[in-house]
Length: 154
Image (cartoon, rainbow, N blue to C red; front, side, top):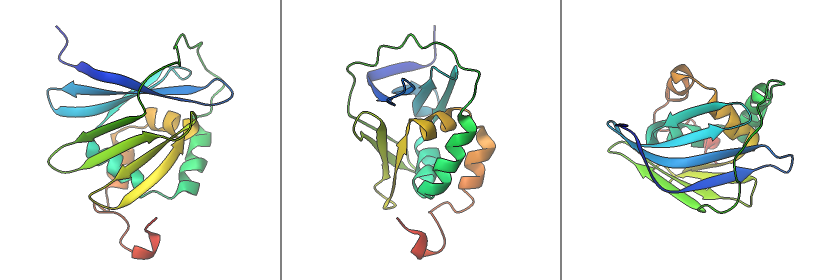
């Protein structure tokens, strides 16, 4: 018996070139997570609300640069049906809350309502998230409530 279960519809984000990411809410023994699946890269990651909050205060330009590193020649054929799905997902725990809203077909707006940060991510940035390890989010969380300088607030 699986200790992880999915709930609700998936949110599909697709690029014009056929790349895409499937985002699905899951429940694990450690709480709610969002499962990010990048079929082209054959990668999956599960992120909690705090990890996703840390993404919201990253600079969009830096995230776009990081996305280029996920672009790989080694891709697999996706059998994903990109039709349907939901337009919004939300996860929370005692430390954080994140809302994802579909932005057209090729992007997702990620907001941390309690902290007042947000960012819009395209397929490339979402694919990049799927190949990150725990260390990336540890670095993001060196400032646990966002950038120390309020001028960085976006």
